[in-house]
Amino acid sequence: MENRSIPRDRGLAKIFHDIGFIEGWGTGFQRMVEGCALNGNPKSEFRETAGAFIVKFLRRPASEGISGGISGGMEEGIDRLADYIRNTPGRNVKEIAAALNLPQRTIERWIKKLREQGKIVFTGSRKAGGYFVSG
Image (cartoon, rainbow, N blue to C red):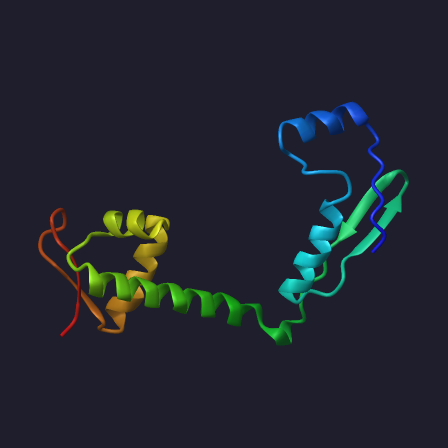
């Protein structure tokens, strides 16, 4: 891909560069192309129409299954949560979320799945209790 960048407003481009919104001239398009390729997306379409620059990002075909990637990532997260509970039993949702650096709502969803599978239990009062591995 030819890497040619011509800012339309050099003053604005310099301000964005100075405050860190852009790294350098012409690096963004190449990063977009590489990111799409790493994700398995078809090549994006770039075109100029009536003075506007348009980028069309194309999705992967449905047969390649984005849901597989999402559910696979979720399963890894749930396994990570189960390992955390196994290694540090008795923690509540707030403590687990802070330790794993994840939103509490995500932890709550994953805990629900682990409880439905019978892998963990909650023991104690609502305020002072925590999660433990079953068995």
